[in-house]
Length: 130
Image (tube, rainbow, N blue to C red):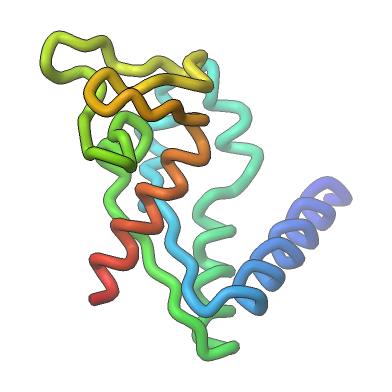
């Protein structure tokens, strides 16, 4: 029970901070059911409580008159945010979870995997918002 309360408190603090400090927040429509099939991620994903967190973001956005929406996660990690090239196409290998940095074979932009994905999620969110 104590771990549950700490986790819930943490999620409340993070979600409140995000919503209060930003007019617009976008997140992936994470399909945790599919992600739980990846045994390397399963425990971490189950522990974090994705659905709970997204639910908190949604109701707090409404409470604080902010915009929150989710976007399709397709290619958010695999696509170059500079030129749109998608890894795993044109004879390239898809990125694997261990690939934390990569260079686009088309435009040669160097990416931190998470930062690149965040930029792709934001772009998808802005497009969806329009």
